[in-house]
Image 1 (tube, helix red, strand yellow):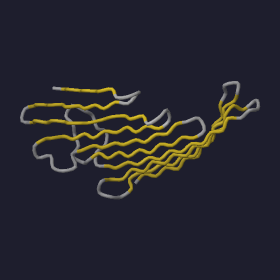
Image 2 (cartoon, rainbow, N blue to C red; image 1 turned 60 degrees about the vertical axis):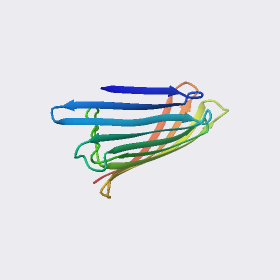
Image 3 (cartoon, rainbow, N blue to C red; image 1 turned 180 degrees about the horizontal axis):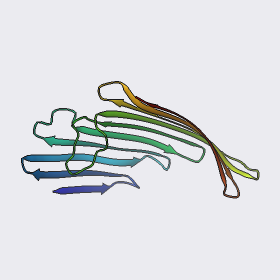
Image 4 (tube, rainbow, N blue to C red; image 1 turned 180 degrees about the vertical axis):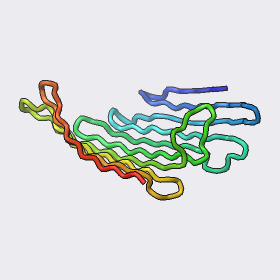
Length: 167
């Protein structure tokens, strides 16, 4: 059984919920979830979800939580993402690539539009990702710095520097 409800709020905002019920032999599993996206203005939004699996003998850490704060305008942008998947989160009707982690992401951008030919826009971007085991240690991280130059002709030049860590 799958039930999905979604209610449109003011503008592009919405709130929704999901329920699944699975019976396979001795297994009875239910998943409950709430999600939504809220636009505070044309540039700032928050989206998130909370999902829980209800199953016999599953124990604690049976939830998934995500929150995303995003600001996107022409000259500035930032994004902050928090994601946690419990080690016992296993929705029987869904696919989970990795369990038992907490991930944080930070992204910053500054763009400048130029008045002169041939450059249309110049942007500097920075992104960081940190993934921790629910047991504590840092498992992986990535940091990226990028410079973009957009030309009036439609061509683009990018320069990237990446740093990766994997335990």
